[in-house]
Amino acid sequence: MRRIAPSKGTLRVTDDEVRHSIETGQLKLQRERGTDLTIFSPRASGMGHHFGGELISRYWTEHNNDLIYRVCQLFRDNFAGVCMLPRSPGVSPAGSDADRHKLFEGNARTVFPRLDQQLRERGT
Image 1 (cartoon, rainbow, N blue to C red):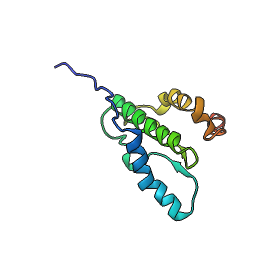
Image 2 (cartoon, rainbow, N blue to C red):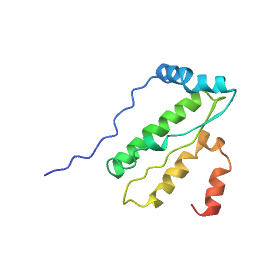
Image 3 (cartoon, one colour):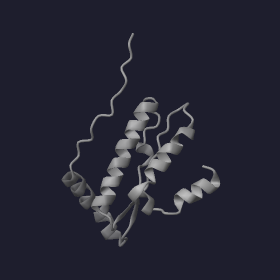
Image 4 (cartoon, helix red, strand yellow):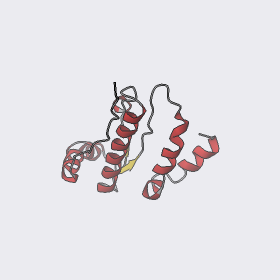
């Protein structure tokens, strides 16, 4: 039996849909609570590390991180993004080093400028 590799697919959410969701949800709560910045990250319960294999986990992680990035670009003054790294049962997390460094390139590095340095110093 031939196995077919999963495909990443396309996340079809417009900026207007993202904007509406954030403005009527998290941003509304921010204003009601009197806060001005939210550390925006995936919810652990939604990370889905236990679904599918390594490739599915990678694709899901990329979609999540892309969406977090979009929110942080649309609402630069209100959200600081935190990425998720792909994890799969039975797969060593060592392979995530490349993902971690990729996520800290460019604009993402400005969110937590010392985080990459701290992770290197700890050897993680």
